[in-house]
Length: 176
Image (cartoon, rainbow, N blue to C red; front, side):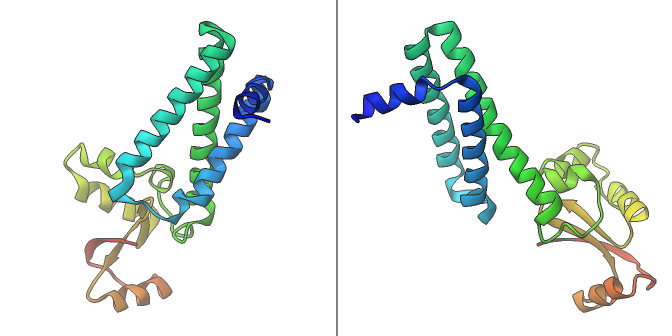
């Protein structure tokens, strides 16, 4: 088969099947790439790649099915991809991440935007104190962050984790 025939074959598939396939590709993208940590130097390339992929899908669908139906199908396919990607990321962060055992707000477990949301009030220390009152000495404060009330060295924090009845005095946040 020549490439144009393969493209016609793929575009000829029913929309629900294409949406299912794009969701599977979203999960595969998370498991194959995104699960291996946040890569700051190539974020711009990742965004450009996703935008180009979305535009390519939209253009091919418009050329194959016409403007209205093509854009509708392209939107469904792209939304399915991002739903699969973000659902996989959320499930991983809540259930399988190495910090999943630490208590904390659900939004802090799932997204990186919880910290900036708290910081909008400029009362971060008050919010962290409230979190510690609610959840205890060790709190998951972000997707890869935990906060601890501790006195002294990190070794003392480990002792507090093993013996939660120990008294605490100061507040700190540590990136894991």
